[in-house]
Image 1 (tube, rainbow, N blue to C red):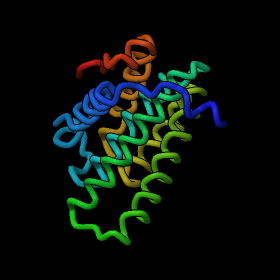
Image 2: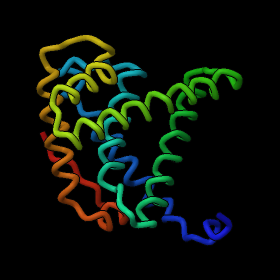
Image 3: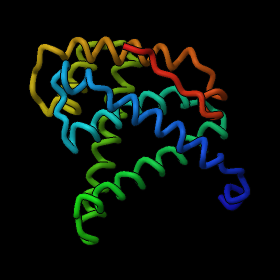
Image 4: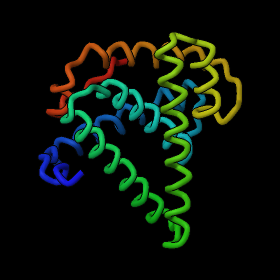
Length: 174
């Protein structure tokens, strides 16, 4: 729609702050050292994706400003993934294919996570996390991650969308 070009974009500094807060939350030692999530490129991507999905879930409203903010946050996420792949030495020809695959993984996680949370289906949530975070492996820490996701989803739901869009995203500390 032509009018969409006239919509005010969110302040890039605020979008970056929210993104950095999401990344910081996903980099907590407990995920890797205590809960057995691989401290690897894939493991880090999976955890950032998980936290992004939770924030996007909170921002999913009919409010057009929330949609614009979410899109800016999404764009920054994949711009950062592109930059990271290039820093790790991925060539110009390989990056678009890897970004496309990452996008597919992200959308798959978002869809299954939202469905499981919407339906309050812990079995589906476990399945989503095994598939998307633990790379198909059952692990004793799975139930801890399930509880973490439930707590964070509820905690984010208690925050005002406007607060998040002004840079005040918070996660419950563990």
